[in-house]
Structures are given as structure tokens and as C-alpha cells.
Length: 325
Image 1 (tube, rainbow, N blue to C red):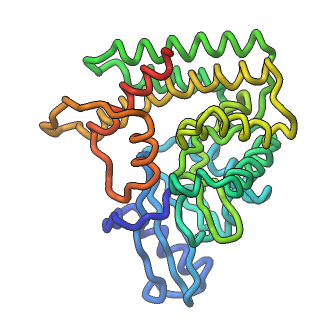
Image 2 (cartoon, rainbow, N blue to C red):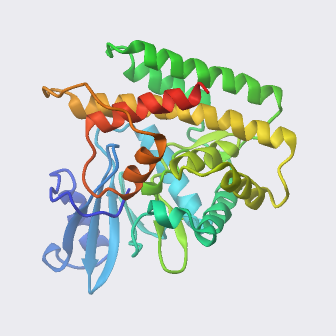
């Protein structure tokens, strides 16, 4: 859930929940609540900014296509994260669990430039530690590789460029085997700490979009965040040291390197999948010119306009090259 406001559409399925929250939580009529869509990521949930008496909130509404298991998994993760101070405070949950009202965090999502600042990186690392201390999700907590295999199975079959999917999932499976041999610790992870899922206020940072959590090596979160911020080796060492509260050992450096390769491969799957999703039913040119990784990291964090299928296909290609080095 990114708090950007370029999407003007209010989905019909959202309005019944807006009416209910107006009555249940605000004890008011719908006419007294101002509603404005927030740009979501590339998932199925819709996010609305609600304003009542000059106080802003976010109403997150899951898709009616989401299973009760998926809904309960994300809801449980959000509640636990909010209680730990990692996610925005929750004020109201609909009876069916498909809608959640939470604080609106003024300040917006993490930009590429803010992500390079040590003081903000330290706050993010602190939130990671707290997130990783949350107990395993009782509804659904797959391993990193199991979640990626599920995505691969669901979305790769109809793609004419099947080889890119096969290469990526092979890298992920090999990485999982290597991490197992290093007896890596297993914790609850956020699973998708890209900059659009990190809100930055003047005082603090918060993680949102908890639907992709895994039970995995904590370095999966650290490595993915580092990739999305295009950190240098020096900044990666600083990130690990800040998280561990000691200089990383040889094995810890190995784990981070393996997790980084796995997460580049994960970006191959997601980039190819999102690109295909965006181009579905359209006569869109599949040709794209690849840029270096810093281009994709910066544009994804900073660009306020919807990104194209070509952007994600290019991202997938460069991510695969990075995963194979």
C-alpha cells in the first residue's frame, strides 16, 4: 500500500465498506466522510484515504477474489505488526475481515534518496528486528522458496519466455539448499520490503502490505531491501552490522550473499509476472531496452506514475543477470 494519489478510481466493491466504517467507527453518515483513492501496488487490495473531522485514515479493502486464508493471514500479520509498533495502528476491522481501518501516515513512501540516509536505514533495521521477533503466523507461513515456487507454478505456464522463469526458480532452489547447509535461523519476515511498502514520517518508519510474509532467514528481508535501494558493498556491510549489532561473520556474509541472489531471482519472477499482467489483453510491444540496476531501483522508488510492462520485463532481465553473477 503506497500512499500516492494518482489513481482517481473508487472501485464499486469499496463503497459498501466505506459506508459501514462511517457508521460503525465514525458514528456518522457517509456524507461527512471524505474519500480519496490511494495508489496501491500491483496486488489486488484497494486502499482509500478517509478523512473525518480533519483526521486522516487509510481503509484497506481486500479483493473479493482473495481466499479467507489469504485474508486471515494478512490480517493477523498486520495486527501483530501494529502491536509491535512496526505497522500503522489499526482502529477498525470489518466483520468479514476484508476491510481494515488504520492510521494514515503523513510523509509518504520511502524515496531512493531517503533510503541512502544512515539515520533512516537505522530506523528501518530496528523495525526489521521487531518484525522478525513476531511469532510465526498461525494461518500461513511458507518458506521463501515455497512461496516463490507457488508463484512460479501459478504464473509461468502461459509465458512464451518460460526459460527466464525456469532459470530464476532454479537459482532460488539452489540458494535454499545452501542456506539449509549453513543452518540459517528462521524468523517471521515481512517478505516484500520494497520502498513502496515503507512509509516515512517525520518521527518514524512503518511497514505496510503484509500479505507476502514468509518464515525464513532474516537476511531475506535485509537482502531484498538492500537490492531495492541499490546499496554498495560498504552500505550492505553497514546494514548487516546494524541489524546484527556486531560485525558479520564469514557465515553471515555467505548467508547474505545467497539471500541476495535468491531475491534477485525473486525479482525475475515478479517482474516477468507483473509485466505480463500489465500487458494482458493489450497490443503492447514486448521489446525493451535494459538499463543498469540502479535505474530500476531509483525509478521504482521515486516514480509517481504507473510503470509499464516494458519496465518490469527489463527489470526481470537485469535481475536475472545479477542473480547469475
